[in-house]
Length: 241
Image 1 (cartoon, rainbow, N blue to C red):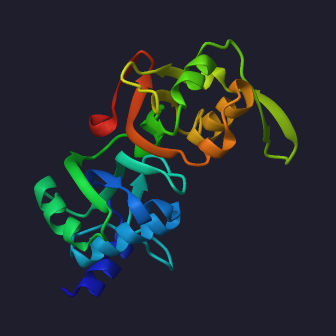
Image 2 (image 1 turned 90 degrees about the horizontal axis):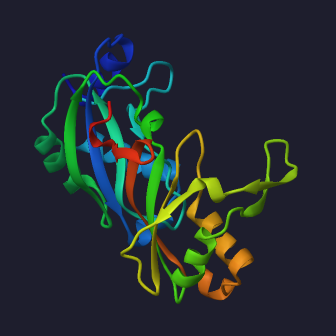
């Protein structure tokens, strides 16, 4: 069966069982400046070219069934993000990596992969925390002072477009001890329930601790890990199914 015919057949069928390849990937450089939808299209093309038995959505415009753990903001590097690819039949994790990586552009790479039979939960639903490294001149000292505050009010637009004040302190979990003078390493809430974007954290350091906005604009942000569970009992999302 040709690839196009196989894709059409997948679209018509009702698949009761999914075999998922959960891939951990890294992106950097120019690829960090593409949006989430473009990143999804890059993976879709790579998997199609790899001729893997990906499942497709139902309907008039079938798309490969890919689920990302947490959308990446434009300009953010990552060494620890995940995507689930639903397969029609079991696919060996090593085979997935060997076939997909040659089809990905420079600065985007699958680092590891596991195979999951019949996952019980969506990948997006298990994410509760994210780990970031933020590198900028002298940022760590004011960032640590920010963690010492009991309340950190930041203005943001709500769903109705009104400006409201929100306390982001409950979303800031902890800094890590390996932070250096110019690189702060933090754990924050992330996911569909509560989410603190790193750019909001940096802006709070500027507003509340007087950090230089010009230096903040030079910040290099890297998401290094994603976790599930409730702090302090958290674990990596590789095997959370």
